[in-house]
Length: 371
Ligand code: ADP
Ligand code: GN1
Ligand code: MG
Image (cartoon, rainbow, N blue to C red; front, side, top):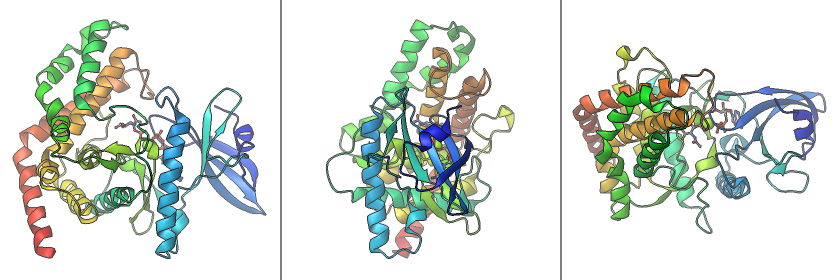
């Protein structure tokens, strides 16, 4: 636990710090919700310590975030949106005007206004929520496509290069510095037998079939805040990996987090199944706002979820073998539980791929008729 009253002092808060507590269920950063007194009114902010083990250059990362959020605010204001400050993250400046601040221990912190009357969901309850979440993430891609200026920094190199994730796993198995590889032989074999899948998207990108776009790259469903009353996707958050990528990374990761019946680390894997109504809703929301997809992208909508779920499982497995150094865990076996869960979802997606393909086909047909 950090001393948040000290962190508060690094920013131009214009309100009095009252207290703070750890917040949310993100796996990477240290997130705190902090209450302030603003002339007698209680308001809250998010203070976040950027995990610099994961993000080697937090300052470059914040340059990306500041550019993307300023662009979003500019567009919302241009449209005269009545809730501009609720529809995008905005950086509260540090005392020196920068969108981040260093603490005495060398950590980099940022502060956002708390988006009220909305929340992120670890598990979605209804297709209406899935539709709204996907509409918001697709809209985010559309907004990012118009971002002026230079290419964004790659905050994590080769983040969704699944082939390189495969190779990183094989290196971890080779080194086996925690002596864990022996107990996860079945999972390692699961990945080995799917080696070819790891190159599908990267090969399409290298061949120029699938274009590079500015994408969010971490579209799990708790990274979009849905309105408490209307379920509308009000704000896309967690912009740390917003950088050059591919549209299918965002669609695939949404499918990974919303379509399997079980939460990401659930262990009752015999009941793993797919929620086809969620898949249909995601597809419909995403293709409505991300209305720029080319044919190669459309052709891979059905399998993107499987590929991103496989990749995420590989990353959990690698981290487990490496001794849990990347993803936060609350219990010793959590990363291997997450891995097994992802692989169970991959298996069901493989078995039911033709049904996913049929849904894609009918949704794309419907879109054509509507346009
Ligand atoms: P991580 O990279 O660790 O996942 P996030 O940026 O996703 O960190 O933040 C963690 C959680 O904090 C989110 O899932 C969300 O619940 C909450 N959160 C983050 N920013 C805000 C905000 N501006 N307003 C309200 N809640 C937020
Ligand atoms: C991490 O930051 P968070 O918790 O939203 C991870 C994603 C994974 C996800 C799995 C920067 O997301 O790539 O898909 O966990 N983020 C980073 O739950 O590695
Ligand atoms: Mg997050």
